[in-house]
Length: 303
Image (cartoon, rainbow, N blue to C red):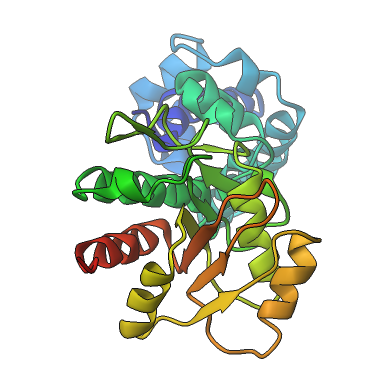
């Protein structure tokens, strides 16, 4: 695990400081004056000015870095730019370069796993897509652990398989939904998870969740299980809201109709049809809660 701060310290700062020291020396400032302005030792200035440090070619050749060095060098040398202002200007550039830019690219090279996340992101952003994506993945993993430790869960897996899904807060399509690739299957009485959760690998259960959200549900997770009247009764005994929908027509429209009354719905179910297996969909705020609800329903199964 490599932090972006390490990239800044190891690659950006030595290069940036050496460029600025070199610029100031070329403007006629002494090593002592440069050291005072940059807050470093004279020996460090000497090393920077003479190129006795490893410099990042990517930083060295970035036009924005070069422009800022020239701007700060001119202002500091003339006494028009304070050290505080120079610091702020440099920090602003660093934050800019961290967001899907030069430093983000260097960070990705140092930690290739970051390449799995498309688009611009900033690792320091509390609301970044990267953070939300990792939280959703972790939530599904927690839910899968709960299911794996639930005795008898395999008996609730429908013939088509189960899937545990969770979507991002602003999910628009299945690419914004984390799920198990290939579905959870009952293999000789044991729930088998074929792979680690991923985005965009579920169409059916993800589609049900997204349709429910489009119809007004605040759920961000869903888990499909084998339907039975007894399961629905147990859900109602525990205070969960249940609604039936028609699976033989347009599913999205049927779910919208089922949720049209505005009541809280925690279990959506359909009783089957021609070539359609009866299935119940347990909805929840997150994947772990959906798994816990199914565990509770399984533990309370009537004899």
